[in-house]
Image 1 (cartoon, rainbow, N blue to C red):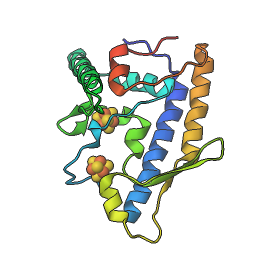
Image 2 (tube, helix red, strand yellow; image 1 turned 180 degrees about the horizontal axis):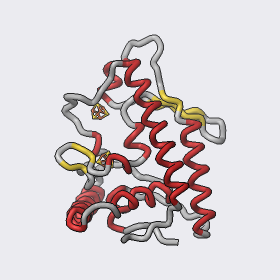
Image 3 (cartoon, rainbow, N blue to C red; image 1 turned 180 degrees about the vertical axis):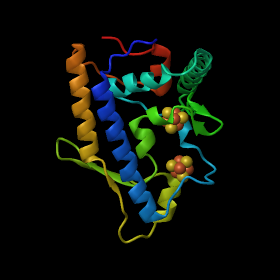
Image 4 (cartoon, rainbow, N blue to C red; image 1 turned 135 degrees about the horizontal axis):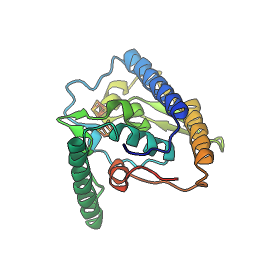
Length: 197
Ligand code: SF4
Ligand code: SF4
């Protein structure tokens, strides 16, 4: 069994928050009659970096439940992803490789996918702790849909992000790790193994 630093109670609260993120997304998607169905693109090849210990640990909770052979396969794909990303960056390009958790177009770890996987697509806004407001127009397909709309429905991510930051603080305090800056792709999280105390 793979040891994990995330206490079950905190994992349950993160799962609940993740559900509410997906719920907020679904409401806006429904209002826009927007879905990913029959999209030629697949956002799982977008290069995202993630910043929380708790998401890394929760991802590993899911990875830890995979049969050994599946985990080996995922790790091999993650190593390949990192090599491709490094080569792209060396060429001065933005990495664009399929996420190592994507299998035949679907997420192999759906319940444990990260926050941005649940939020990307529809328009959103956030008010940062310094009061600065930021807006996200949604993916290219959603932008086509909302072009010319007088009022665009959007997810307000502010409270959801704040809650995630709170859970992160609780985990950092529980592990006694001290605050460390995390900036990792999913592939890096996989190759690095589960976070340690
Ligand atoms: S979020 Fe947008 S670009 Fe990504 S798969 Fe869905 S419809 Fe396509
Ligand atoms: S974790 Fe799942 S949903 Fe997120 S990018 Fe990877 S395959 Fe896609």
